[in-house]
Image (tube, rainbow, N blue to C red; front, side, top):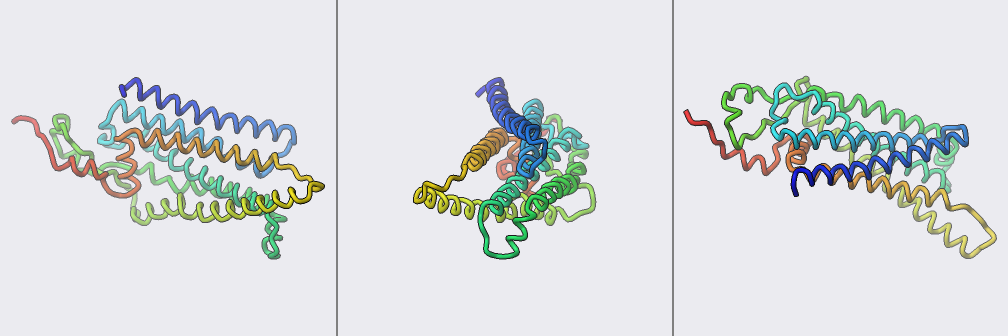
Amino acid sequence: MTFVGHILFFVALVIVGVSGNIFNFIFTIQQQVKTRTIQTVGLILNVISISNIILVLTTFALVLSVFQNAQIWCVRPYPLAIRIEAYLMMTCSFISFWAIAWLSLFYCIKVVNFSSECFRALKRNISSVINAAVLLSCMLSVLLFFPMFSLDIVDSLEKNDNVSSITNFTCPQPSFTIQMNPNAYIAAIVCLLCPIPLMIMLPTSIRMVAHLCAHTMALKKNQTQVQGSDSYVLVCKITISLVGVYLSTLCIVASNRYLKEKLWSLLCCRKAEEQAGKSQTVVTADV
């Protein structure tokens, strides 16, 4: 695929991702205007939509930067645009993932009937608890990824006078210039981005689906009971749209080799395997 073809493909993915989230955002705002209240579900959906819009646009901007200059990772000091884009990508991913986890927990507590008094007390105050959890997640994400602004490359690149004449040059791995333990920091980020939210999301989703299936079977046996299911269908549609956004964002990142390798190197504290293999071959200029 040509350069123009890649750009058109990425633009199409951005349009799909942004338009879907804008639709969700506008629909949620309209519901809030009608009810004249900001409910918990509306707050969560607004947070998810806004963060996903920023995530898709930031990812696309980073892809364009890499397409324009594949050696942008070698510039020292690290370009401010790269630092901002990395910060926004990680922050918005964190906010979106945790917001979806809080949404799953909210619906599970609201829908499922629990016998425990603790869960009953939580059910009565679930809106306040989830609202606080969403706001705390946003604040934590802003602080958690602030070290991204300290990213820079090692000093060894400055000592090489023939950088412009090296054809197979491999950029040094970026590192944090502030005093911190990078391994512990990356481990905390990975845990907060994947395992912990999934520990909230999966059990609550499975429990809610099991309850809804049992409830549907009960309704079929007793047709005199009527209970609306439109809200549950809406939740399913929103979940599907969010999955589509994540898949489109993943396609944008994974389809660009340089971006994929550098992000993998940054998150895993090691050079990408392919780049590590290439670093064995260095061609210098003629003396």
